Image (cartoon, rainbow, N blue to C red):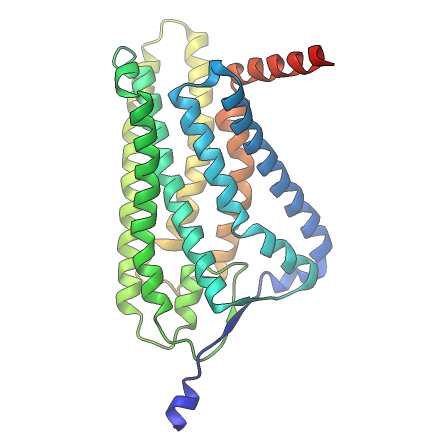
Length: 313
């Protein structure tokens, strides 16, 4: 009986956020709210303009609009609760809601990484194999690739999250983070989580390395093709686009490697909070601009849409 009382299960967790800067809560709330709304509006604009303008109904923009949709869902999983922490301090979250948040965050995050690899393959085929591109990237193949990214994200993440949810949580209930992430939850578990940590490490390594290797090979071939362009101006323009893409990729992969690719998930928990801001605030803010809104085709589509609105008036 005494042992049973000592092993009382935690019914809810408390998200700590960033206690050291809580005195700046209202300022940080406004900054992160603005970043969140800008990211959401940018991604919604991309989805809308892609489906409205028939010139943008190509495989590349289908993948980019899918990427935008998943990114909206991804950041919405964590940012609203994060904003609430800035306004009113620590936030409680039920045991079930915490693990649902952890699963959805990891599932969508994994899907986004695989989709980035698909995007790089799409650009590789469009630039390096233009004659084969329409045949390979037909509508059916595009749909199957997006579904495959979703399926892989679900299958790879559901097992470790279920394993961790079956662990015992009987001690501290304060999560030193602004959302329910895998490492902090393992840290709070009273059970032996070595097998879960090992599985999480292997899966993180496989997911990040697989998508990164595909992306590196694709971009390497793209760079070689760019070097063969006859015009120096065309080369400069292509390199400018590639370099901006690579900056975002470096930020995303760098932060995720720092957070997840480690045998012991409880290491560097305090630093994980800052690193997680890169994937939940910084790159979602940059992605709409870098991947789509800088594109001349999108600019033309926006001008066409505005012209139609003016004519209707």
